[in-house]
Length: 70
Image 1: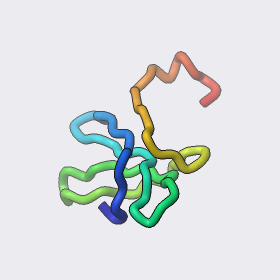
Image 2: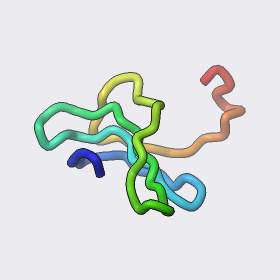
Image 3: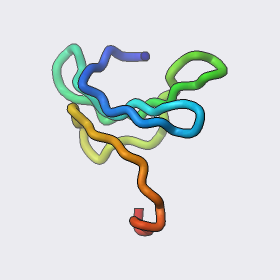
Image 4: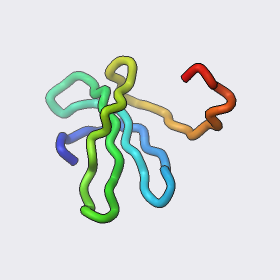
């Protein structure tokens, strides 16, 4: 991981997984979303961010049809 985080949210995404938010070791929370790249075995920081930094995140996948405005 590019930065040490704990109390993150994680969710399976296809054949990999995403890490969302989390508490920073240096205090404060993260708004980052990382996707694990199985080819490079590294985490890629995505352009998408949480609306505000959060820790203790719960993540689920929902069908886009439920929230079409998002």
